[in-house]
Image (cartoon, rainbow, N blue to C red; front, side, top):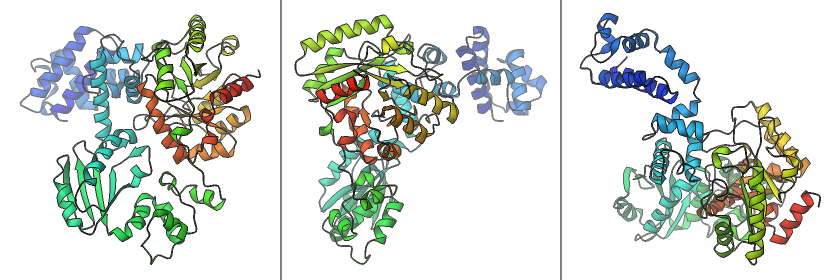
Length: 558
């Protein structure tokens, strides 16, 4: 065992002891020993127990831990501390700039137990008011997490979007570029991107390749007459494909679709003709309606085409309001009035559904029963004050471990709508998670099931659920399922949208906004909905203010 490995283990041991508020003297001794071991000019593993005990800076107690580590491969006391610590919390300790004292606040005071939750909390500005934190520290943590995730070579769609749009503008201006488009995962609007792919139609690829190689943000990895592999300065792999202008539409279709989609498409084409003016022409030749890029996954699009049900996919302009949002009443950044006016004046929406956190979410200043009443009084005043706009009284009520909501029926009845979500105890079997959600769905006051699996893309898997049983329960109880638009969530997963629609379950594209800027996340929810084949008619918040008010009243039996 190398000295660096031993030192790293001792360092983690000292951090765990500090996290669990063990004896400060022992914590300091271990940290000092870790530093000493790392700097030793000889291999400590080659020394006898007696020699290890005599090494300056270790001390008898620490030396015994080192000997135990060398002899057994572990330190039992450290293993016990690890067993007492959620795995996600241990992972958080590995983030640059986050020491044990900060981790303790994150874990115990904010109730955060994974890197995904921590990143989400940074986006919600929940760290800035916590002890020992501030806006600068929060931003440093957020960037450190992004770097850690990016180092794995995979990215959220939202993370690559800015780079993608800047690159396409830069390449568009190059001489010899006749046709240009994104292809691959990015053009299909996949929630996770492994790299950016472009297709360039040109009669002279060699000249364009030379121009691309001069783009300062790109490093060339490999080159051929048909492809140029590069890496952006952010680490994103960028691939440029080249073809002749007359085959651009053909290659555009094939480089966009998945292997499964392309196999079905090619089986319907002659194969010899590769000259099409547009993709629409190509799909028509295959006897198909035009299939939007988002749908080309080879999963359900051909079934929809065969049934004559190719959807007119939802767009931003179709949405009339925004549901599931947070204000300064809980963990939001802006006041109710600021959120409402932004929706009306900037987004041109007709209504805002405010759904601050409920009382169980103490870490997010969840609303007690008394504060619920106070908030409703403010909403009444704002509705009387703000013209041509409606604020609906909602709540994001925590689904407790037994599946019940964390308010009495008397309080729940006061809301126009209730978003029921899980925010705690994520370690569950599929059976437990499913039954927990179903019980919440069966609550007569539940209007919307929020982020059904609790997943955090690239950082935390969702709890396992039986999707069909949960969706069937929503259908039976008239409950809407949320498409949470936060690019970390995008939950309900688009792969289950069609099943929900087939069962008659409406969906709601919700930004889960914690600030005015957060409303723009709606865009990512729309992209996810489009991948799922969702139309405006399938969306709750495509209803206008009058229609959704009637819907809420009908749901409550008023």
